[in-house]
Image (tube, rainbow, N blue to C red; front, side, top):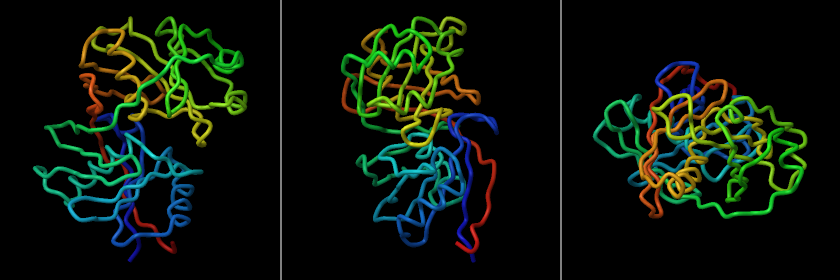
Length: 266
């Protein structure tokens, strides 16, 4: 009997949109090298591995090249798999033990709410090569533990920019969130994209961890606690954001299963 693996599109209710993640619910812990090999084989931005632990699940996330300390869309996908495949009943909370502490997910109708730590950004002096690598001028540049947070003058710039990823990789910090307020759709408060060549992902389709940074950034500027955000990758995705100024951010998203298979000879 092989290991079941499920592919889920997260932060969308439509197949082939949002951010795909692979999810493995393991019967027993596996070696780190094995998990990295599986993530490389899946070749998605993240593959999640879960093992039941006490009143929850140990959760780890791997890109095709490295393990990462926090991943929003693969956590959303993991929670969705636990409920949709019967590991948890719909009224149970999904509790994850991770390298970023305990993360909680709750099923709320057709949406899943994630309870994540906020990630504050500080103003910084960016290297002059940053604008050259992004190919657009920045309005403001901040830095957080994820990378640079770059505000652009307009939604059009965010949507149309085409970064030079090879040049980005040469910077001291190669991972970048770009963002602006939205002008084209009044339903959305802000728009963003996320580039992470430093962890092997040129552009991530929809990034929960980035919204842990964007929540505090836009609360300071828009003076509100609740947002509906759009990540404008080629696949696109929608994130509900609630941040009241404390140390936690609540992210809402939807998910859909697109594939289920079995790892053999692994």
